[in-house]
Image (cartoon, rainbow, N blue to C red):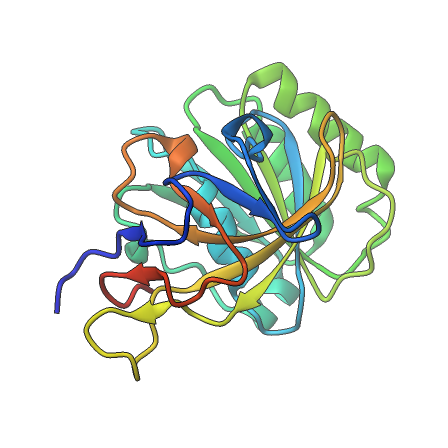
Length: 239
């Protein structure tokens, strides 16, 4: 079994990096691609309980840098989603901070956003605690844009309240791609990623997959056609 998980678009009529909006059912240009590498605050909600797709989506979006990523989680999110296993992402260094209360997550995220030695900040918060209000997200959004660091709020068990996040995503698992060597085996994972609120671009729904062989951070998250599961083939099973 090959140990890579590169993605190819074989006969799908799409070029690598091209995406399809599930609502419009049409291919669009790279200009319309979600720019997930910009230094802004983003909310990412798990579409279903105990679904790790949202976590995988955020991991695929993180910059590959010598500078570490600060990853902060509260107790409730760890109970539902488990702990981050950093060894599964060998090209990213993580500084993990585990706290009990969501207010401590927000404090650590805000302090981390001041640090030039980090490449990104991720905070896991369960539910919709009162401390995670519009004012708190506005502070994080301003920190992200002032420091040039992307900040991600990873939400599970959520009620989608007000937020100053520049983008708000809902991510769930989709049927995996076909495995090239064994059609009966699961292929590389796919995520259904819905951008349901954003500033400066139209919402949309896409199928997304992680391409670990991409050299550029902006190309690491691939978007592809929703109704062509067979032409979109993975070389090997990916985590």
